[in-house]
Image (cartoon, rainbow, N blue to C red; front, side):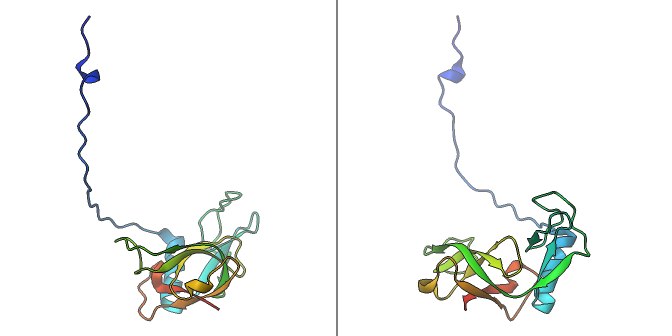
Length: 154
Protein backbone atom coordinates (compact mmCIF):
# COMPACT_ATOMS: atom_id res chain seq x y z
CA UNK A 1 0.00 0.00 0.00
CA UNK A 2 1.32 3.41 -0.99
CA UNK A 3 1.23 6.36 1.47
CA UNK A 4 -0.24 9.67 0.37
CA UNK A 5 2.51 12.32 0.37
CA UNK A 6 -0.09 15.00 1.30
CA UNK A 7 -0.49 13.44 4.74
CA UNK A 8 3.26 13.66 5.38
CA UNK A 9 3.82 17.21 4.14
CA UNK A 10 3.16 20.36 6.14
CA UNK A 11 1.14 22.99 4.28
CA UNK A 12 3.04 26.10 3.22
CA UNK A 13 1.42 29.25 4.53
CA UNK A 14 2.32 32.73 3.33
CA UNK A 15 0.97 35.55 5.45
CA UNK A 16 0.28 38.90 3.82
CA UNK A 17 -2.31 41.49 2.90
CA UNK A 18 -3.92 42.49 -0.34
CA UNK A 19 -5.23 46.03 -0.67
CA UNK A 20 -8.49 46.02 -2.57
CA UNK A 21 -9.90 49.53 -3.05
CA UNK A 22 -13.54 49.54 -4.08
CA UNK A 23 -16.60 51.73 -4.34
CA UNK A 24 -19.84 50.63 -2.76
CA UNK A 25 -23.24 52.11 -3.58
CA UNK A 26 -25.60 52.65 -0.67
CA UNK A 27 -28.58 52.66 -3.02
CA UNK A 28 -31.60 54.94 -3.10
CA UNK A 29 -32.46 54.58 0.60
CA UNK A 30 -28.93 55.17 1.89
CA UNK A 31 -28.36 58.01 -0.55
CA UNK A 32 -31.43 59.91 0.62
CA UNK A 33 -30.25 59.57 4.22
CA UNK A 34 -26.67 60.71 3.47
CA UNK A 35 -27.75 63.61 1.24
CA UNK A 36 -29.98 64.92 4.06
CA UNK A 37 -27.01 64.74 6.46
CA UNK A 38 -24.80 66.57 3.98
CA UNK A 39 -27.15 69.23 2.61
CA UNK A 40 -29.61 69.88 5.43
CA UNK A 41 -27.92 68.58 8.60
CA UNK A 42 -31.03 66.47 9.19
CA UNK A 43 -31.21 62.91 10.44
CA UNK A 44 -33.87 60.99 8.53
CA UNK A 45 -35.52 57.74 9.53
CA UNK A 46 -38.23 55.57 8.05
CA UNK A 47 -41.17 53.72 9.54
CA UNK A 48 -42.33 50.24 8.56
CA UNK A 49 -46.00 50.26 7.55
CA UNK A 50 -46.28 46.61 8.64
CA UNK A 51 -45.12 46.71 12.25
CA UNK A 52 -44.45 50.43 12.84
CA UNK A 53 -40.76 50.07 13.74
CA UNK A 54 -38.72 53.25 13.09
CA UNK A 55 -35.24 52.76 11.62
CA UNK A 56 -32.26 55.07 11.58
CA UNK A 57 -30.35 54.82 9.34
CA UNK A 58 -33.36 54.08 7.13
CA UNK A 59 -33.76 50.64 5.55
CA UNK A 60 -35.36 49.46 2.36
CA UNK A 61 -37.00 46.50 4.13
CA UNK A 62 -38.06 45.98 7.72
CA UNK A 63 -35.75 43.65 9.62
CA UNK A 64 -38.64 42.49 11.83
CA UNK A 65 -41.51 41.72 9.43
CA UNK A 66 -39.65 41.98 6.08
CA UNK A 67 -42.12 44.52 4.67
CA UNK A 68 -40.73 46.83 2.00
CA UNK A 69 -40.67 50.33 3.49
CA UNK A 70 -42.30 52.88 1.20
CA UNK A 71 -40.58 56.17 0.33
CA UNK A 72 -43.69 57.87 1.78
CA UNK A 73 -42.90 56.59 5.29
CA UNK A 74 -39.88 58.82 5.95
CA UNK A 75 -39.62 61.19 8.90
CA UNK A 76 -37.09 63.58 10.39
CA UNK A 77 -35.73 62.78 13.84
CA UNK A 78 -34.15 65.25 16.20
CA UNK A 79 -30.42 65.16 16.81
CA UNK A 80 -30.59 63.93 20.43
CA UNK A 81 -30.63 60.41 21.77
CA UNK A 82 -29.46 57.99 24.43
CA UNK A 83 -26.34 55.83 24.63
CA UNK A 84 -27.39 52.20 25.01
CA UNK A 85 -23.89 50.63 24.82
CA UNK A 86 -20.32 51.81 24.23
CA UNK A 87 -16.68 50.89 24.20
CA UNK A 88 -13.76 53.29 24.65
CA UNK A 89 -10.90 52.98 22.17
CA UNK A 90 -7.49 53.89 23.54
CA UNK A 91 -5.13 52.42 20.93
CA UNK A 92 -4.61 53.66 17.38
CA UNK A 93 -5.35 51.50 14.37
CA UNK A 94 -5.19 52.70 10.75
CA UNK A 95 -8.88 52.05 9.97
CA UNK A 96 -10.31 54.05 12.86
CA UNK A 97 -12.23 57.19 11.90
CA UNK A 98 -10.48 59.45 14.46
CA UNK A 99 -7.44 59.38 16.73
CA UNK A 100 -7.95 57.81 20.16
CA UNK A 101 -9.16 58.18 22.77
CA UNK A 102 -12.77 58.06 21.56
CA UNK A 103 -15.76 55.79 22.01
CA UNK A 104 -17.87 53.78 19.65
CA UNK A 105 -21.42 54.01 20.96
CA UNK A 106 -24.82 52.63 20.05
CA UNK A 107 -27.08 55.65 20.08
CA UNK A 108 -30.85 55.41 20.04
CA UNK A 109 -32.21 58.70 18.77
CA UNK A 110 -35.48 59.99 20.24
CA UNK A 111 -38.31 58.56 18.13
CA UNK A 112 -36.30 55.61 16.77
CA UNK A 113 -36.83 51.98 17.72
CA UNK A 114 -33.27 50.90 16.94
CA UNK A 115 -29.87 52.34 17.73
CA UNK A 116 -27.00 52.99 15.38
CA UNK A 117 -23.25 53.08 15.89
CA UNK A 118 -21.38 56.37 15.92
CA UNK A 119 -18.52 58.00 17.80
CA UNK A 120 -18.12 60.16 20.88
CA UNK A 121 -14.89 62.13 21.13
CA UNK A 122 -15.22 64.22 24.28
CA UNK A 123 -16.40 63.69 27.84
CA UNK A 124 -15.40 60.04 27.93
CA UNK A 125 -15.07 60.22 31.72
CA UNK A 126 -18.80 61.03 31.90
CA UNK A 127 -19.87 58.40 29.37
CA UNK A 128 -22.22 55.68 30.62
CA UNK A 129 -25.27 53.79 29.41
CA UNK A 130 -28.34 55.99 29.52
CA UNK A 131 -26.49 59.29 29.07
CA UNK A 132 -28.12 61.78 26.67
CA UNK A 133 -26.11 62.85 23.62
CA UNK A 134 -26.52 65.29 20.72
CA UNK A 135 -25.25 65.03 17.15
CA UNK A 136 -22.60 67.54 16.18
CA UNK A 137 -22.34 68.08 12.43
CA UNK A 138 -19.05 68.69 10.68
CA UNK A 139 -18.36 72.01 8.98
CA UNK A 140 -17.38 70.39 5.70
CA UNK A 141 -19.75 67.58 4.75
CA UNK A 142 -19.42 65.17 1.83
CA UNK A 143 -22.37 62.76 2.03
CA UNK A 144 -21.10 60.11 4.43
CA UNK A 145 -21.97 59.00 7.96
CA UNK A 146 -19.06 61.04 9.35
CA UNK A 147 -20.86 64.21 8.25
CA UNK A 148 -22.05 63.82 11.82
CA UNK A 149 -18.68 64.69 13.33
CA UNK A 150 -19.62 62.85 16.48
CA UNK A 151 -22.04 62.95 19.38
CA UNK A 152 -21.49 65.07 22.47
CA UNK A 153 -22.84 64.52 25.95
CA UNK A 154 -25.71 66.87 26.73
